[in-house]
Image 1 (cartoon, rainbow, N blue to C red):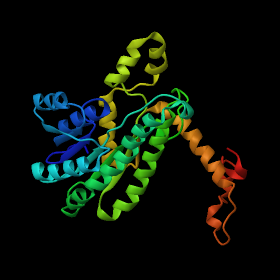
Image 2 (cartoon, helix red, strand yellow; image 1 turned 120 degrees about the vertical axis):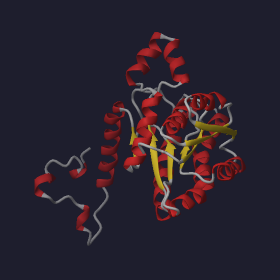
Image 3 (cartoon, rainbow, N blue to C red; image 1 turned 90 degrees about the vertical axis):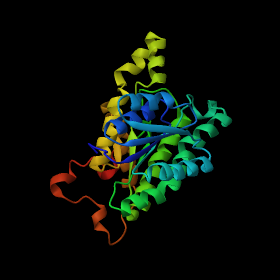
Length: 288
């Protein structure tokens, strides 16, 4: 979407980070923006309005379905409808699974997984109405490169990683379920992004800077790629070249495991029999 003129974009978690960048990018492309966040998003609204855009925010806790339903009702009342839901609110916690406090794990999963479901569920009818009127209708779920595998250049964030794998599943099922309604669904999968929090982490020590900076992207770049990916109809919008190697390795490992399954009788299409490619296929004979 090079232009979002006359469109309405809702961004959850737009007070800071990637959500703030998505809100600013949407407004720059011509959209009216409504931010839902538990944090004060007025600075983001001010940044948009100073630049000539249109934005406002309302408090919304994505773990509470009533809050999300109220946000969906308000956008119709205030703006007449919605065209894009940036289902972005989320949080992370470092540590291995066995070292993570169960209460903290619940908070991460409630926001990163249940919060995404709440957004999809609450906004579907409004987006369906937009699609029926011939208007754009999109959901952009914010996942992570953690949705594509376990990044070797990031320390253990195991509950977060699991939640972002779930974001991929929610996106794929939503894309299937909502396609008949005219709603397109995509997953944004950035790596390290120079958000306010990450910038502070980079500045905290030489070691942190050396660990993160080579893999980091600016949030504005990620936001621009997000809307370009929506326009192109991509299911998965990967933004960081550093994600490619480990994500491809994960895909090859998965396919190697799947190739161990026996072929179904009467389904020769399950096997790669093309003589010109069979010898080069990395998945033949169960080899990763």
